[in-house]
Length: 457
Image 1 (cartoon, rainbow, N blue to C red):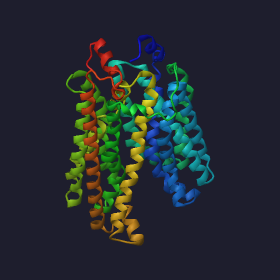
Image 2 (cartoon, rainbow, N blue to C red; image 1 turned 90 degrees about the vertical axis):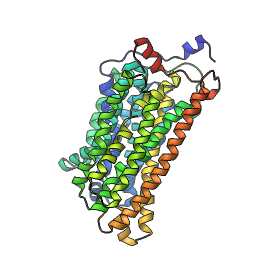
Image 3 (cartoon, rainbow, N blue to C red; image 1 turned 60 degrees about the horizontal axis):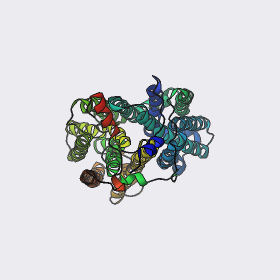
Image 4 (cartoon, rainbow, N blue to C red; image 1 turned 30 degrees about the vertical axis):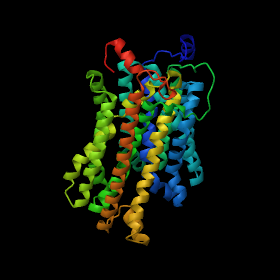
């Protein structure tokens, strides 16, 4: 154990948050899920202007996602070294630069490179944002701030395609990136108003630091967004194609139906944050279990779509999916960063977001691979490609492929659920009186501060 003087020297100096902290952080953060969820809708228009090379075109999306996922690991450690405000500012500058170059790109190669730059910057924004909130707020204020943070993430994810589609229709595909650049340029300028968090003194570890994963409670929290990627993000991406391929539903009607999944994501984080602070028995662990249960039930229920039932029958499973994804958003981030040493919140944020973004990229791609493989076993050539893309024509083939893919999702989700429960159980069993490195983590800072304020964590 470290002595008091060492612990004090390791503490980061944090200036109090200004009234601009949340607006600046949230404005920048809104762009990130919007860029992930909304850029794909511009691809047909980009292909018209810059060419339709399928590999280069897909890297407009994949380049951003891969760079985003990998860079979160590096930015996490760098944030602890150079400061969270500086990390946020550098990220805003990088995304602004990448967006400007994207808006004026003369060909797909330049656009792909610009998107990689933007992905690296988005990782810095996400890491800096969550670290700033964790360091600047305490107790119930931190819980509330992370709830708003989660709501904004959900809002960007849910409205990204709608906003991007409107911009493409009103302006052009380049207008999507212009809007990103304007918002992030303003955030970069406004970063001067964010609280300064001085890097902790002491020896520096490696840039790629995975040692925090020995903290079982933190590891369990990192696995929660993996469950969300499997059980929600995959279906958010491909369920509209299933509506088309099985039921011949148009894009507009499918978009309206998807509100059953997205609206719960928008309203749940703030409601659950208020409930957690009000009811002592409603702990983070309970919320996580409710989330996992809702995701499992929602995925099982969505199989009703394959039985020829009315769309009404899939509305309840879709709401369950939205609740399952929305319940832990923000809450898990706040709890995960509160169970690690304060001077390592940047590293923790980087690891958490690597699990989140990396799992989204892996399982969304995996869903497409499984679906295409099953369709390809029944059809060939353009018929297989068109059916896998969700075009109506072979509904029975698509239905069988959809059922197989969702069953795979349920199996994976069950494995992750068991892993989360097992890791948290081992963490609870080892915690009393344990001095092992795996559990040598501080008590939840949110809880200790809340006790001082008289508010349950």
